[in-house]
Length: 104
Image 1 (cartoon, rainbow, N blue to C red):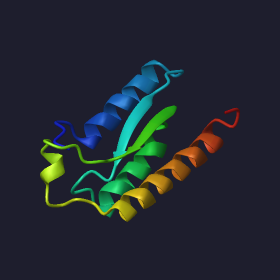
Image 2: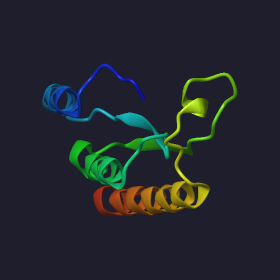
Image 3: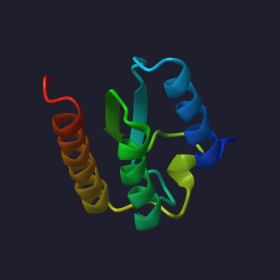
């Protein structure tokens, strides 16, 4: 998605925030199925859910928007794959919440 940050940098910042503010609540937005997303990329996202211990997650499916660069990229992810990854991510995050926040 042409982001200028690396996952290692992100995890480091999250670790520092959690040390400084133990009660911090962290929200994330995740788009599943962006063009060029590989299964390996997706697995990394799944791992990040537990590693960072997000409190909230807004999880969405990628959908092409006309006149955007992403809509014309040749590496579009099939709809069935997007739906599968979306469902797996929802299940994983729900499980994570049950295990880490049983009161929710």
